Length: 158
Image (cartoon, rainbow, N blue to C red; front, side, top):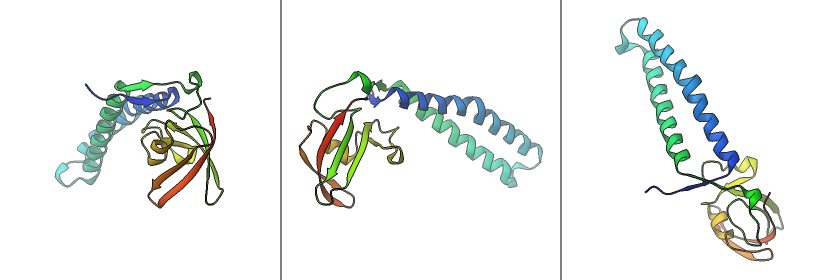
């Protein structure tokens, strides 16, 4: 039995769209590229052919990964959650106790985390430190840059 992967509905939709694009657009294109390169003659020294075959392998591997991930997805809609404790899907506002710098992010599945979009993986050190905690709690998190202490300012489920 494979382990379930927590995921938001938006994250699942993005993975499904990527899989559709790979299967319907990129894979057929690379198959055409292989055929064209093969028509150029001796494939043993044909860089176009080898590059296209390598790309095909990467696309097939990504499709396989996406299929497995989607099949194990446990879709959790954060807008249907509530509570005073941090859990998957929560949008959490924290302040660095030392610098006062505030950050807001949402805890999402590993395949949808993107710090630029304000999402972090539920498996990250920061998220693991926050899970189960409440507004006002101080949380010490060991991060790659060293230990930091954060105060939880807000918890929301949108």
